Length: 214
Image (cartoon, rainbow, N blue to C red; front, side, top):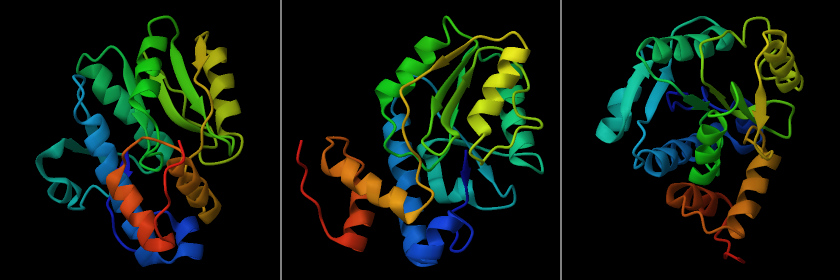
């Protein structure tokens, strides 16, 4: 799930410290690297974008299929993504946001594998939310949950368990919402072999190039 890359409309907390133009540079890099990383797998990659009237599909081009998000709130939009795809016959669905370019194919593979034995798979993020959610059956885990807050994960798990669903958790990670998070991503990539070429270029434009240490 992603937002059309437009200055002032993406990653507003990050933009307060980094500036709108450099934040846009980083966000575009995230989208391009995520598309390159996950768009080459045998499983289909679908981008659900907002605003619905934006030119996201034209901006992304032919690199992956794009669909409009629907709904007024994030809770509604997430629910409708799952409803739409389950309605088309998909059996295991993983949804992630555009602010975690460092998530690996291995982590996504583990999420899909986790859905063979559990109803819900989540990757906790350090801020109390989650970077990834997977389901193997249609259910509403979102209505009334304070998504985007430090209680989002806890509330989602409680709702799942109240519905009698089983949950599996991947090792926790982080998403990029603030300048501190972006610095953490820079440090992570300095010790990583994950190519993320566009993200590395964007970070180099901001801070200069960092050598990989591992």
